Length: 146
Image (cartoon, rainbow, N blue to C red; front, side, top):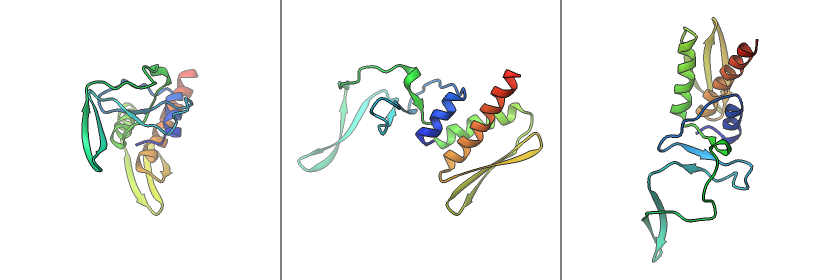
């Protein structure tokens, strides 16, 4: 999953989110920054019953947060989702070179853009892909503004 700070940068750079079942997100700057939410069609919890962990099913969840604006949510893309977003943008540019390499201390995502290779390194593979996607989003914004 993309780290929340990097996911926020992707959102600010213009990445659009069309929420789907099982997507994860955070509500940053709400006092719940560490809480990760998932879109689900049912509430399932792991609780202790007589000292033993059990899976409980709930028809509705009632708690202090009834609603949140989608604009306040930050999509925490999975590694697969961020790679697919990156692949789509690479395909739109007519070329396609994308590789992920394992390195000591993390991963490097290498993409070819206009015949030049760009390298993006991070501890997690999803963040290496996300850095490359952020590069594309910021590049698209510059081209659009020109």
